[in-house]
Amino acid sequence: KGGKWIVRLRKGLASRLWENLVLAMLGEQFMVGEEICGAVVSVRFAEDIISIWNRTASDNGINIRVRDTLQRVLNLPPNTIMEYKTHT
Image 1 (cartoon, rainbow, N blue to C red):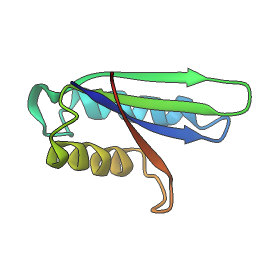
Image 2 (image 1 turned 180 degrees about the vertical axis):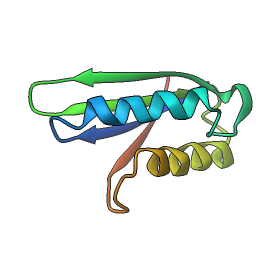
Image 3 (image 1 turned 120 degrees about the horizontal axis):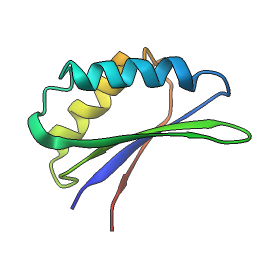
Image 4 (image 1 turned 60 degrees about the horizontal axis):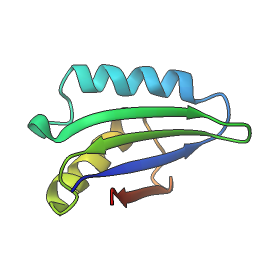
C-alpha cells in the first residue's frame, strides 16, 4: 500500500543530510500525520542513498507534500532527481 521517496547523493553528503531528515521527522515538519513510517540511509561504495517511507502510495497529494518537504529540509537543488517507488 505504501511507498518510498529515494534520493541518491554524492559520497560524503549523507551524514549531514540524514541528521537534517531525522530532525525534520521529529519536529513533524512533514505535516502528514501518521503517514511517515520510516527512513533509511544506505552508504554505498559509489553513492549514498536516503529514503523516506510513507503508508499510502495512492494519495498523490501526500506524496507530493512529502517530496517537497524532503527537498526543502535536505536543501536539495531543484534539479535533484527524486524517485518514488511503491511497495509491492
